Length: 482
Image (cartoon, rainbow, N blue to C red; front, side):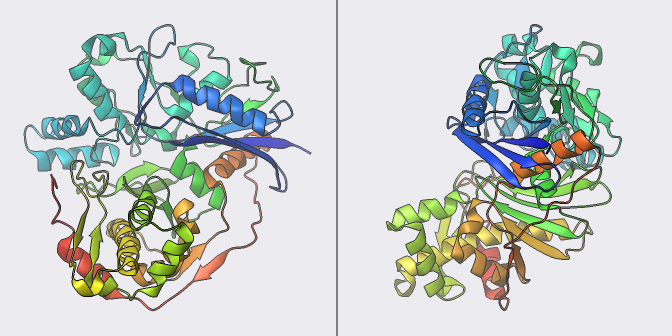
């Protein structure tokens, strides 16, 4: 029996799953928390990996390991491979003004022209989450640190490199799915855009930091080191190229062309499998690559399952009670609408916005209406992302609902009314880690395995167009919207 390991180094935690490469059977798993915040020392990721590996019973018997990870995070390394400053994560919005500057500059002062140029160049219009904007922020606010940057890695790149024993900057590697979220790699050219990186850092093209090699979907990134700081690894274990978290989840789900995944976790993500790259100059859809050789246009929101957590805490009920309340209220929540920009927002690009309640009347001043409005607000936010993807010419055949938010009975049952179509809910699982494990099996055996899955549910309900109509009327009426 060949065992493979998949790692999900996410915003909140490190999760490791160990599967039988042939059957997909889960053999062991482990988990450890990451520190909170939008700025984290990568050493904390390694510590969490060690703890998760111990909880999973060790990794000495696995034939291959692959890492799926949170996208966009800026890991700046000096010439000795040391981390220069804590990594800025995807949800750090301090580089919002840097994104605006980069857009205007590429358009010679015209933001619309700049957005079009960025979309046509890299498939994405910069927002605060992209690595390229964080590098501009670093150059503007910490020039001494920016001058020391000898290499730039993403979180999953750094952890894979650390698993290899941190052998030297020239051994850094990444994959096309994660690198497509940096802002300086083109899915149209399948190559880095050094001119855009130079623009961000204020350097010449001939004086740029080292960038990780971009590996193919099943190309090994090397072999594991041995007994790395207390983690016993099989020194013959192959390291997969890894993937961005959304691409890894798509691989774990086995998504195909025409499939869309709506993932509700810390953030919300609507992603689709496409045979060709996309370019949306509105900035709503990011034109990323996937982990198989295709493409993964997606719309990502800063706000996800925490919307439900916040409102459940606000009205003082458990998650189970929250679901019961939400399902007891009518569609449209009696006219009460929640615009859920609680942490600012990325899609639409409103980094300084705040959440808002609209249509509050005596008749809907109940916990049930508030719970219903929170679920509908979250789903409307994601439904707008789905509409933006459809405007890119992608036809949706199947809609999957995953992530921690999909565990909510209210979300599962209300989703079809907002999306206007049936919703497929796979059993709860660590799909990013499972996708990484599936990639590891691909690297180890040379074939992408087909792993069966039991327990999928399908939810359907009549559409409730009133919900989207109410939301559309007020979604721009928020404080700090720009």
